[in-house]
Length: 510
Picture 1 (cartoon, rainbow, N blue to C red):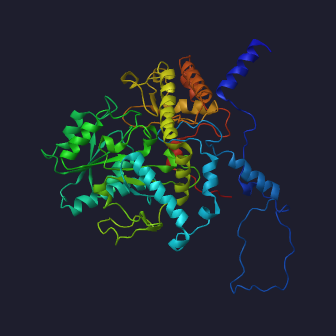
Picture 2 (picture 1 turned 30 degrees about the horizontal axis):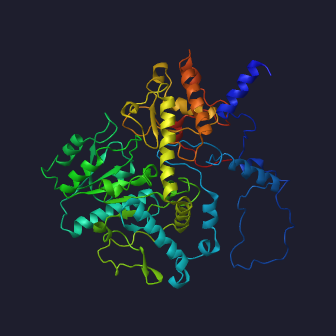
Picture 3 (picture 1 turned 90 degrees about the vertical axis):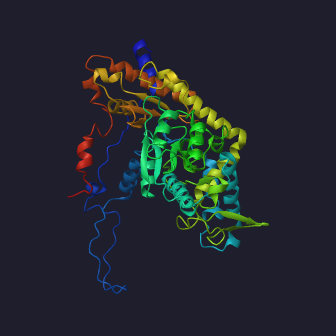
């Protein structure tokens, strides 16, 4: 093998670059041939309709053969990039491997085939599982009031803020109309607060990436010297810049002194599990994305689950039902059992399949394993940050280690006319799903990378190599023009995304 071929081979091995067998696929209707239908049966004669309705007109299904139909849908299925294809570095999305054991447990007939309207006496095993999950979540967070019914993360946010609103209402604190949020928060945080009837007050974090006591005090006392108009705050910890809020305990104390409640967005709880309990730094209520922290990847082909965990003080206000235990049997509580509750949040009792997966994940790992999960997630993110901090702008790297995700920006590459979107497209050309781009919004051109604990060092090294190659190419002459052509070998090239968003073509026409 020549040195040139060896370099190419090694380069492709390091970056997982694949260019062959990328299928282009037409619409199924475009494959139709009138003389080649999928099923060829004689027209039935003298057979009246038994439905009592007029005969149906042509319903417009494409006339294709079985192999055509099969290949069409199988080819399209390969376009859906997943964690089973390769590294999925989306920041704040926790796209990690889903152990197949969890799927096997969720498909056990006694779990998969039950119905929410069955008598409680016939689903005691399922209720016992939910009760056990409530206990584990309470133990891991230090917040013993647990409601499993919220269907996903944003739904959990809604449940948590509604719980806070219910507490203030029943305690005569109706003047508390303001929720504080950092400017780096997930967009669902201010949206949830507004949905619940609160005004939102943003706290700036741009300079440090984290909350400061000074900025928090300014927001807390802005319109009332005692903060008596503050209902609470919504803070993600670790935050969306991938940093732990080091002043959070002192900030929580100030909030509690003013009579507000601390809602923690638990989207990034996978960086804390087994290491620290949110209750220990002042959290009153939080949601947990079971589908991110405890198994199934975010958006993994099915429903999520966003239980909330509360202090004993707030637990009486959270939604019903929870699972309660009577001697040796289990039951779902009602509003009669807890009249201060804000009521039922949704139909039935939550996304039960996710409850099974989450508990299977917890019991497989145990306390020591869950602690290692967090440690490995943080280790992987810091490995990427330190390997790339000299190739890209790493705005907060000087402050020390990050948590579970690394934040970079395009500040260096912009000098050559290469921006974050260009580098994301170049990653596609190299065979990688891009990281989260342009979030958080506190800085320009952000790239948020979350490797999770399930990626090996070899996988991370391949990604790091691809990123270093992109940084080096961005320094070359005419880099801007070249980067604007990426990706080059995909069935679809660079799209006019603005036009596509403003004038989407939503249906195919003849």
